[in-house]
Image (cartoon, rainbow, N blue to C red; front, side, top):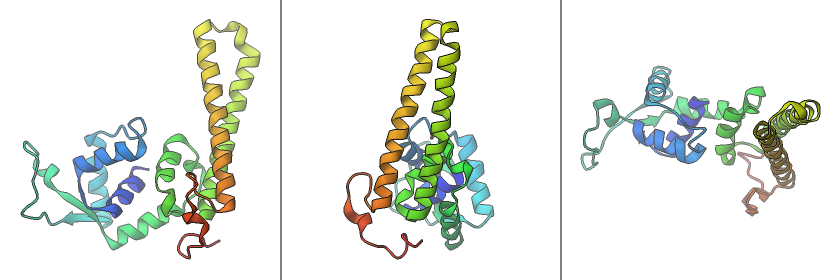
Length: 198
């Protein structure tokens, strides 16, 4: 999923590694994007080796932060092959896109994903959370008398979170089916040949 996130961010603009890490946290939230430089830089190297990203020229006027290492001075940009790879990754809608990390990354780039793929991912995520919700309900009905007050409260909190997410997903699915975006923006209602093909 880190590959998809990096390619998506570099499609917006070239960035240094530290900028990428900051943008990952901004776009995905700090919990989902708790990415160390020890994970980020090997992934960048792998993407470079695959030909999906390259090094951009640094303008003479660009200010490089003080005490920045050589590798922190490298500006990465997406290549034409990287744009194709990003499109392939966006089109994926398998079980890995329903899990917490996979869903979060895909959802962050939903505006660039076609409607049919968005619906498949949202419906798959809803099924995954409904399964989780049912598991928590079963645990609470069978074993709640064995839990102390704090463990019981934690289980209830998990169940509440699942119920809220299912409602949220149902609203998103309804909006997708009717051509509306989540915020009530009508831009998705107009057919877009590049995104709304069946």
